[in-house]
Image 1 (cartoon, rainbow, N blue to C red):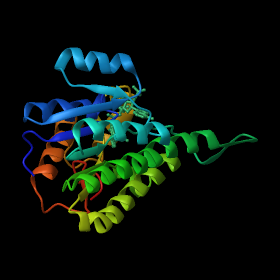
Image 2 (cartoon, rainbow, N blue to C red):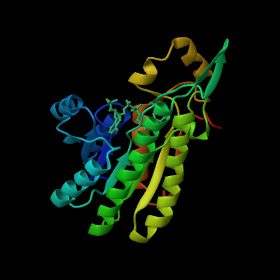
Image 3 (cartoon, helix red, strand yellow):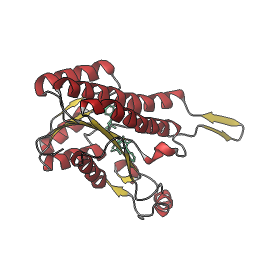
Image 4 (cartoon, protein in one colour):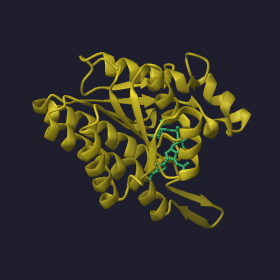
Length: 247
Ligand code: NDP
């Protein structure tokens, strides 16, 4: 698919990796539209770049359905949806300190499932429905993580990112009839505001395990998005962009 002129909806893109995608896609001539939860961040993005957006909590079915209905009425179907919104609420599943047993709280499980799994399900479903309705042979890109293989302290996050990878394969099979492609990116450790806060000693330990010898850059995830959009033969696959962390 040629990028120029394409309508691309990106969730959770008022900051972080999603924002980088929006900026790079804009520079390539696409028409990005950003969904996120904090109006102020959307206002800053609009002021800095002119990229339009709207407050939308991807976990709220009524709001997601209403958004895609109104977007569809105004613009038709988006050519590309990038399901990027995701959160972490890390903690150990069960641990013992002295006599005390600590457990991961159900609330931490549920919140991460709501955003990372249900949010992807809802936005993916509505975007695909709109593409099918308008006969648009579009593309859905889901953002998984290398943690999908299981990662210490990330029972909730790993489960959701594995789910995202599984949904990607399922949708690629089911939506092929409508000419819709689906793919995913599983980033490794990427340099963002969040990972900048990791203690330097821990960062050094992590870096020692990465064959490329460094954290990835947001730009490198965005380059992968560009590749997936442009290369029509990428379908149903999860591209691991992790500097070799998982080999
Ligand atoms: P950020 O936390 O920087 O950005 C995520 C954005 O999503 C934030 O703007 C956040 O809002 C928004 N968001 C949170 N909840 C919702 C919701 N319910 N509805 C809509 N938007 C929401 O994350 P990153 O840029 O680091 O990560 C982007 C994606 O990449 C995520 O899916 C993440 O899991 C994945 N990833 C990131 C890695 C990394 O190293 N950073 C590695 C592997 C995968 P708010 O401002 O309120 O937080």
